[in-house]
Image (cartoon, rainbow, N blue to C red; front, side, top):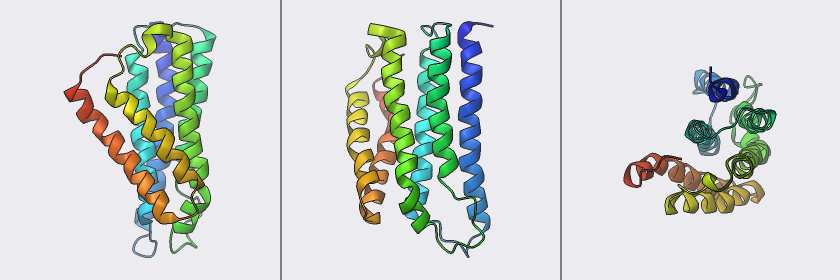
Amino acid sequence: MTSFEFIFSLLVILLGLGLSQLLGGLASAVKRRPGLKIGWGTGLLATWVTTETVIFWEIIWGTRNGLPFNGASLFAGLVVTALYYFAGALVFPDDLADRKSLDDYFMAEKWRVISAVLAAVTLSFALRWVILRDASFSTFTWFDWASIAIIYLAGPMAILTKRREVAIACLALLVVVDLLEPVGSLLWPHNP
């Protein structure tokens, strides 16, 4: 087993469990329909956490040739993937039985979910540089840099707004940017 395989196995377990939490919450919410309104906010938040988790999974795979085997790599990955797990677990409430709509839950919890993802993104970029040094950003395209700028503009705006429509618009933009990532990787291929 290579050092990457050892570290990767822990990280993908946590990422997979986070996605499982999110998808389990979604399945429970869908089972409660039509008596439960999921809403655009919760749907977009779930989609964004999913796409960000998958993109991070891709980023980890891209480090396979340069990821050193040491405690720093293992614990750094643990912290970042734990944040993705936390975000995925908070998208849907545990108590769906008494709810008619998830809109109020979305407005109350969006800041925790989005903050966890933004913290994971920030830590992954900082730790990427610490671990991989100069090679860490050498393969970034203009699309990668534009995506990062949009995340750091729309994410905090969605956290801070009290208006559901603004939060939904910000999340819609974040989802579109993330879904353009596969298109961008086809148009501007690179191997991080």
